[in-house]
Image (cartoon, rainbow, N blue to C red; front, side):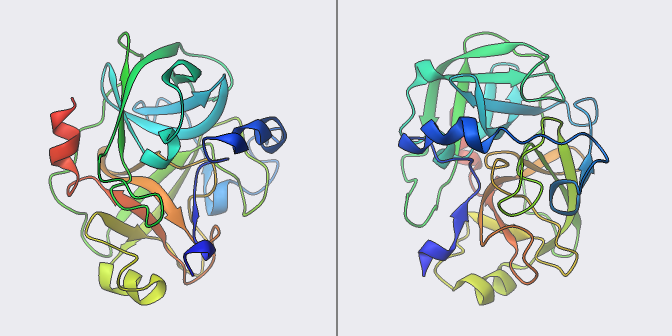
Amino acid sequence: MRSLFRSRAVPAVGTALLMLGGVLSGTAAAGDEPEIVGGRPTTIQNHPYQVSLQYNGKHICGGTLVKPDRVVTAAHCTDGASVSDLGIRAGSSYHSSGGPLCRVGEVVQHPQYDRWTTDFDVSIVKINSRCTGRPAPLAEREPATGSQVTVTGWGALSEGGPSPDQLQEVTVDVISREACRRVYGSYAVTGNMICAGGGQDGKDACQGDSGGPLVQNGVLYGIVSWGSGCGRPGYPGVYSNVAALRPFIDSNL
């Protein structure tokens, strides 16, 4: 059953990266077509902590600046990648241009990351120099069930659809872990995960948003991790739980 659930990298790091040119060829100007799964275009000024994780100069995942030289992203975004092939574009509303392209010095992947269950899905990217942007503070507790959180990224505008060059944002509601487990199974959703979205409005993150921020009032609560398709009613997005993963994150800042 796990094969039904997909990480939200585009595509996964590894041999599938050879497909990036074709996957990322579609772009969308603001207002030309539906924004990212029910969202809308935004700018880096509204989300100055947002960065693009790049592989050989191509966007593969999002990330969050948490210190001038540290980025938090998903472990499945960095798993198997050579540090020399990775870069961070910061300070730009566009993943393909603007802002500095910062060199990566080291990637620290959570030692308990599980490729099969996507548990402990977090990596710390250490940058060789300070990167443009304003770091986001880290959550100390989980967001309240029913509260609104915002996801940003350059992911696909619809399931299987094109990816925009301009940053997008979408607001979704946090759902309880118990409700999320009723959808995906009691063992699939661990304490290291939080869930949001899944409503009839179809608002969600999608492929290409992996590793990006889930925030509330500018505080980083989650990291885009996985889900069943994109924007499917009844299927929430699953995010790495920053509060639960703070010991690992803090030890690498």
